[in-house]
Every structure is written in structure tokens, then in C-alpha cells.
Amino acid sequence: MNQKEIKELIEFLIEKDIAEFELERGDVKMRIKRGCYAAPVHEVQTVPASGAAAAPVVAAVPPRAPKPAAEENLHLVRSPIVGTYYESPTPGAPPFVKPGDVVEMGQVICIVEAMKLMNEIESDAAGEIVKMLVKNGQPIEYNQELFAVRVRA
Image (cartoon, rainbow, N blue to C red):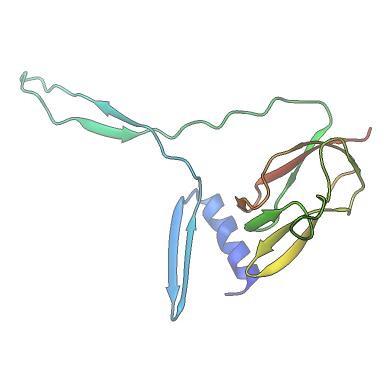
């Protein structure tokens, strides 16, 4: 599978709300797992009309993601690919950007390593970096929020 096919597959899984997917083709194995949370399990006791105790019913309830505080002119830069996030070009080098820095559209703001390739990620908005939403070396998902940028008015 090439990178385009993988991206299309991930978009399809997101669209159909599929949390886990595994594919084997010859010697190639791929496993995609969305959502890195464990759903809390709630046990509900049901009692039939006859008065005899029934087996408990167990239901998983997915947690709701907290909504980020809305801020005027705040733009979220998202990852175009799945991979590992790096804040600097080499280990020990200063980060491309940090909170408070002003960035231009098209400026390289981080690197995402995918399939042994280092992909430079560019800002798709001009403004001030307000917050870095991921940590260096962290695995990230397609469309995951990386930076919050206060766009210039």
C-alpha cells in the first residue's frame, strides 16, 4: 500500500467511525486503532417481572471529549498524516517554534516521521503560536491537533 491509499483508508475509517482495523496482505501487516482511551464500563442490574434476579447487563459508555475553550481568531493546525511528532530538526536542536513565536503561512513548524520519512509540516495560518498541543516524540494520528495559532486580524 502506498501513502495515498493508507490516507484514504484512514479517512474511510474515520467517516464510518471504525475504532479498530487490521489488514494482512502477504508479508505486510497493518493495524489501525483510533482513540487511545479506555471506555468506562457501567454495570446495570435488571430484574425480570417474575422477581428472579437476571444476569447483569454491561454497557461501555465512551467518554465525551472536552471542548477546548473557544477563543476569538484561534486556528488549530492539524497533522496531515499519522506518525511521530518532532519539534526540532535534530535531537538537541532548538524547536522550530514555541508558544509566543509568530509564524507565517507555509513556515515549517514541526516534523512528523512516517514510514521512516521525515515530513516537514508547515503552518496553514499566519499568526502567533498560543499553545503546543503535543509533546516531542509523541505518536500522533491523522488530523490530530498540533498547535493553536492566534491568527492575525
